[in-house]
Length: 202
Image 1 (cartoon, rainbow, N blue to C red):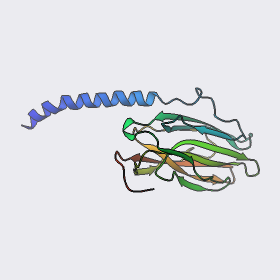
Image 2: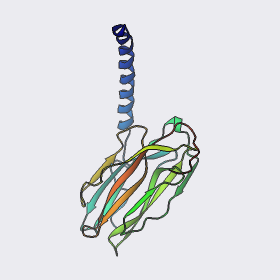
Image 3: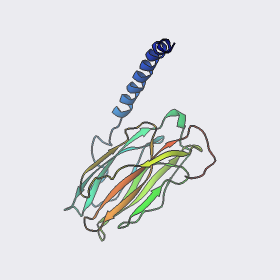
Image 4: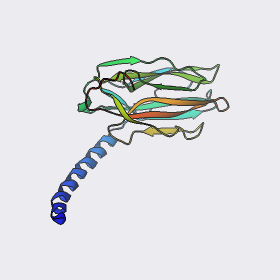
């Protein structure tokens, strides 16, 4: 009996896995940084980056230069959210995270990160940051986790990409080195419910 069931379900499982792998290959092939690897900022200048409506941040790239004021250039990639998440119902800028300090922030109201705004301060050789967040109905985050540090060491280049479909960036925690005048990021990654929930923020 077990052998019969195996013979019935194995072909179905093979087809399903093949379709999922095809979708994943399509999904990950769509990660494209803005302007084909151009940077969204020049050193020591502010910038404002927002994904197109209905898209969220899925990749972050950065390169560091000590001779350019210990600053970084940045680039981002966006992807449309799945249809089952619906359209964004509201978008906003979060509070400013000050330069020269460590900070932890998630999008309020169960929002997802859809952009970044930053201003460079030569007096501290660091940047202040704001998240641009979008809320999707009354969907709630769950199964959240922190990535490893990006970059792995101060002063290194970094390229963080979402390799898991249906997970979203909700915020970050950062540390700042007063010696290296650089910042390491751990991004807060969550899944979102397929149904509306009652929690205003998690």
